[in-house]
Image (tube, rainbow, N blue to C red; front, side):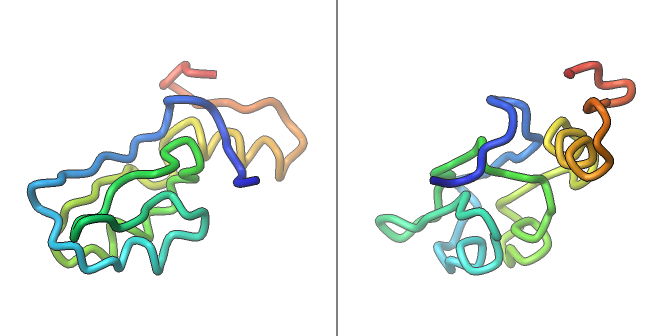
Length: 94
């Protein structure tokens, strides 16, 4: 079972029109958020995104955007690491 954080809160976005199907996102994503089908990448498990930004940094077509370290997934992870309640700061999502 893949790790999931909070449903529908990640800052991850993907542009199918820009994708060249290279598959780099599937290689660098530690949580298997992407897969490639019919020559294009796609988001398969968006709620598994931990917003690390590896996909966006390694996408040669710039088809992926993520605001690494700013969203609710980061707040949940930091809560787990510190033993405190998640806090999204000004985002107010938690």
